[in-house]
Image 1 (cartoon, one colour):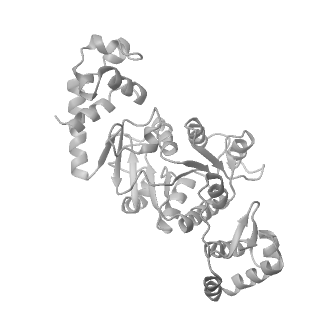
Image 2 (cartoon, rainbow, N blue to C red; image 1 turned 90 degrees about the vertical axis):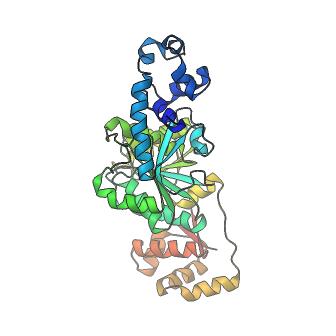
Image 3 (cartoon, rainbow, N blue to C red; image 1 turned 135 degrees about the vertical axis):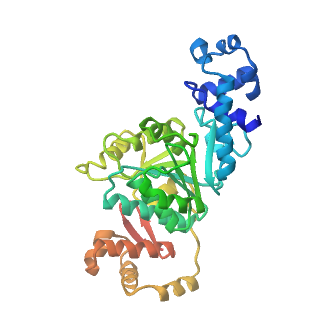
Length: 367
């Protein structure tokens, strides 16, 4: 029996959640003390009582924990206990944070900036492109930012893929154990995430992806992040649960607005209307609201060098903005007879190079 085995045993007591586990440790005086106490003493711990005390079966829990220890050692898994110094600091602030966070990969959970991105599994082109643009924005200004999501279909996997594409670290929080990946179609991405981030879960290796587990994991997605962004969501859904949890943790929440007729924007629009989320159309909106903005001062010489690297379309856009103080995306598209998608891509590249700046409402101005 070792210290990790005791911690795992503590974390898998049936019917006793993270809050009660913390209470048990606090009232008894330590992890080992929980298992040394007689049942009568455990029953006196507030919230435990006779029924829950009966689940604290030392021998059974230790046997299960021993198997988990073997799996952890064999597969290079990290197990972070809530009292360990390297446990994620943001999760430590959450009273219902996981007792143990298992992770596979190499990532600093305590990096200076973290952003969770969640949304519907039925993502639209608008949702996917917005997610990609926002992640690309942060990769340009904050290459150490950590992107967190849940590896689900739609917005989640889009956020992970965008992070990988832009060489950002990303964490996929799972609703099951680490001995498989759900959905299975995302197994190929999980391997890349392990190489450039981590898979994380509070569940032991063999835990199956039961529906209730995904609701539970949403609090980890919210708890690991400085801010949570909801890109698309119907009137109900897991993304809204994550947003509510983030609000309960006093973390910042943002939502991408959509047309009133778009069913996958209703949840986001409702969050904004209820003042449960700040409106965010671009990464810059989040950047400013969080106070992260770090505008890079570029000399005229650098700008001239960048100008020489621009495409003909980008040069035309820059010349157009020279003669107009501010222009909306649609106005630029019409003036140059270019598709909105093409203009948007050009402007994104120019923003990364410090040539243009995004204003609210997809309006642009030359720097």
